[in-house]
Amino acid sequence: MSAEPERFVLDSFALLAYLGDEHGRERVEAVLAAAARDECSTCVSVINLGEVLYITERERGLAQAQAALAALDQLPLRVLPADREAVLAAAHVKANHRLSYAGSFAVATAQALGATVLTGDPEFASVGSLVSVEWLAS
Image 1 (cartoon, rainbow, N blue to C red):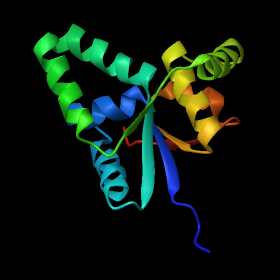
Image 2: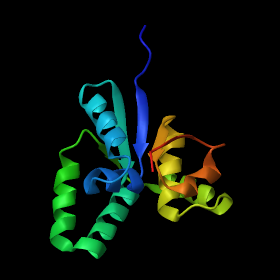
Image 3: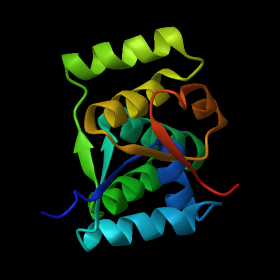
Image 4: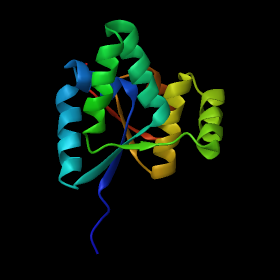
């Protein structure tokens, strides 16, 4: 019996690094390439996806946000809904840790899946006891 492939939750920091050719992009690319080969799995909460899109639109305009969404839709990246269970889990994380609300969805998603959060956001230092965090180079 083979071991299950590693699971990653990408937060908005990781996705923005990938889209913007920023620090950490190489590792995000490597994880996504491994996911394309079924060597691992990658996912994102729809809340974190929304965060990527509003940040992109605010900084670069609607057309760039639409282009970012089109690019993300081509990746081996499963977008998970924010159902009641996810919202309650994220609210619990947020209530007990110094982390953005959107970040709390990445943590709750990782907890639910037994996944590692891929990020470079220093806020995630407060949740190291809850989930595994892989830090992108800064």
